[in-house]
Length: 206
Image (cartoon, rainbow, N blue to C red; front, side, top):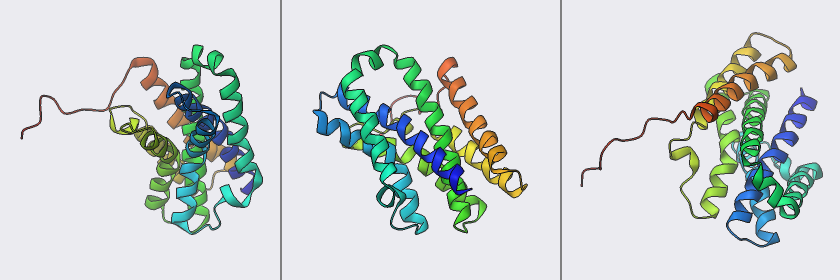
């Protein structure tokens, strides 16, 4: 289980760090700003998860790989941002993979630390969306999860499936594929079909 969690974490961190670094480049931040946003996006959700479940020090501070991965992703994005910007649609797909990996990894780690099914699923969602929310706050914009983008809901669905798979005593690989598959499919369909979460209609009353 430990090896599966670390692999899911590191791959998800790399993908999310690229997405965060691209936001920094578009905001005309310098190389330090790019690295900060890459690290925040890649590590923020896992950091929140570890603090909330009492897994201290957080993995991001206890394992050098957790710091090396977002720094590498940030530097690659800083150097090749023009190329990455031209394939933004593909980067959005990679981000969906990161979302799927993180919702599973966060849920499994919460279960591994003795949390019940409901809080474990919620922490899986927090792990998946937390870094992106922190990134958006740092650049002064409303987090995309609040603007109608179907992002948190697929993450929560994947986390719920992960809990169910774990309770059914499936192998860690089967659990990971089931949870990530549900999240990834939903997120990719939302991107492809332009699905949005319901928003208020008409002006708000004063």
